[in-house]
Every structure is written in structure tokens, then in C-alpha cells.
Amino acid sequence: MKKTYPNIRLRRLRATKSIRKLVKETTLSSHDLIQPIFLVEGKSKKEKIKTMPGIFRYSIDNALKEIKYLEKYGIGAIALFPQIDKKFKDNEASESFNPNGLIQRAIRQIKNKFPNITIISDVALDPYTSHGQDGIISKNKKVLNDMTIDVLVRQALSHAESGVDIVAPSDMMDGRVKKIRQAFENKNFHDTIILSYSAKYSSNFYGPFRDAIGSAKALGKADKNTYQLDYSNISDAIREVDMDISEGADIVMIKPGIPYLDIVSKVKEVTKVPIFVYQVSGEYSMIKAASQKGWLNERSIVMETLACIKRSGASAIITYYAKDVLKWMK
Ligand code: PBG
Image 1 (cartoon, rainbow, N blue to C red):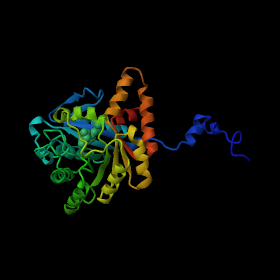
Image 2: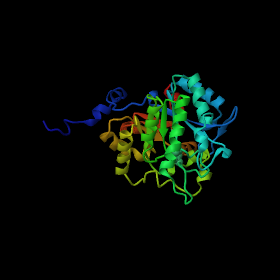
Image 3: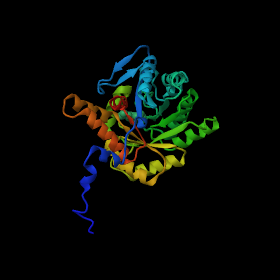
Image 4: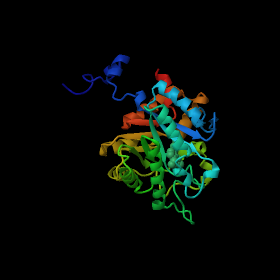
């Protein structure tokens, strides 16, 4: 019999909703989603972020209330990002490893109240530097790799000491995973997970995030092209992933999401570690803006993007839509 029409009719398996469900190759569940949370100093604060309607900066007390709500809806993991007061910013990012800094206090209080929520903390200097770069800069504005690593290690250790479950270096310095892993071993943080932003592209999709943490103004017209990846490249991403795994990363991250799913599927082919994907701020804001204008159906578009990210090989997704998706799923 010929393996062609009419013996083969592919539409048979699409004929009813029930059949379509039986042959579905990927499914999205609430366990796959990580909610980012922006933090700000103070009390009873819930500040709007102009370029990200529906997303807020919370003071720790309000963040705790929000997390209670997220947990009720089934969120299992959150990623924390701070907006740091200008007066604490300098070239050395010295506030980044303050044991009583905003993030360190938040980690302790969240862990104390919600021991079952997995906390992911960002390890990078950009919220803490006066110039908005992810590292320390020299007189001629070069981002200094090895000096930056020393600070990143202190920052990561301060997060581990506060009780974080996962540190996520998003800085893109060479060798930072190795040094953080060594420091964790030396200080007996054997179980602290490193989720390395291995393939973090120098992307225009981070704009709204930089508004949210207040690094946009500091950065000005400068860019991050000397450390984040060129969006024209694939091999570079594979090399980054290889390097980070050999240095002790447990999980690798690829970001942004939707425009970079070819990278996710390539990495999935060549590596066995779990891959997380970050659906970043610009992706959120694009969908949100078009939905507010009535040009896109927000709910269907979001569900489609997340399914596509899973299909490409992600085991979990960081998305500003996590909370909404959980509400829609209920
Ligand atoms: C900080 C960091 C950035 C994002 C996550 N961690 C911004 C940047 O590198 O400029 C972007 C996240 C988003 O856009 O949602 N190193």
C-alpha cells in the first residue's frame, strides 16, 4: 500500500478536540512557570511600571502578600529583581553584597514565610552600578571581567547565606560560574543551584526591564555588546552553554524567548541539562500593548507563545504572564 493519500489522511488525528488532546506532544502546566517580582525599598509600596502595564514594583511587605496569592494559585517559583536607590549605586556595586540589602532581606523573609516557594536571585551588578553596566568599568569604560567576578562571587554568597535556592548569574562574564561554584563548595553551600544565563543575547527586548529596575537612565546610550551575545550568532551560544556546564551550572537559561527558539532547540540537541527560557520584558510589553488596543487576543497569544517555548525544549519558563496564566488555567 502506498504511503500516501488516500491511505494517509493527516486530518484524522485533528478531527475532534478529544483526539487532538490525545496526540498533543507538549503540554504547559502551572509547574513550568516562574513569576518575576520587582522589589523596591520602603513600606506598603506597589508602584506601576510605565512600560509594563500590569506589572509592579513591590516593597517587601507587599511582595509577601503577592507571593501568598501566587502560591494559592499554584506558582512554585519566583525570580527576584531589585530597584536600588540611586544613593547606593557606585562603580564597584558595593551594595550588591550587603547582607542587609534589599534582595538579601527579601530572600530571608520570603523563605521564612513560604519555605516551599523556590527563590531565584539574579546575580549581576547592573541594578547596583552608577553606569548601569553588569560589571565594574575601567577609566576608558571597559567592562572588567575578572574584577567583576570577585564582586559577583560575594553577591552570590550573600544570596546563598540568606537562603536562596537558585542563583542566576545574568552578567555574562567569562568564568563566573566556576568561581561561584568554588565559593559555594568552600562555604558548604553544596545544594545551592546555579542557573546560568548562558546564552543571554544583547537584545533590544530588555528595554522595559531596564525601566523597571531603573538602570535605563544610568546606561544611557551605552550598550552591552562586549559581553552579551550577538543576535546573529548560534555557535557562540553553544560554546557558552558548554563552558557554563563544565564550570558547574545545573541549569542553563536562554533569553529572550520567542525570537530565540532556534537556539533553544539547538542547545536541547547537544546537551542534557535542563533549559529554562526567559520570555523577557519587551515580549510582555509587545503582547500587552497590542492586546490593550484590541489588535490581539491576549490570552490565546500568551498561551501560544508559552506552548511554543515548551515545544522548542524548555523545561521551565520565566514569564511576566505567569500569574495571569495560572488564573486562566483555573
Ligand atoms: C540584568 C538582567 C536583565 C534582564 C534580566 N537580568 C537586563 C539586562 O541585561 O540589561 C532582562 C529581563 C527582561 O527584559 O525581562 N543583568
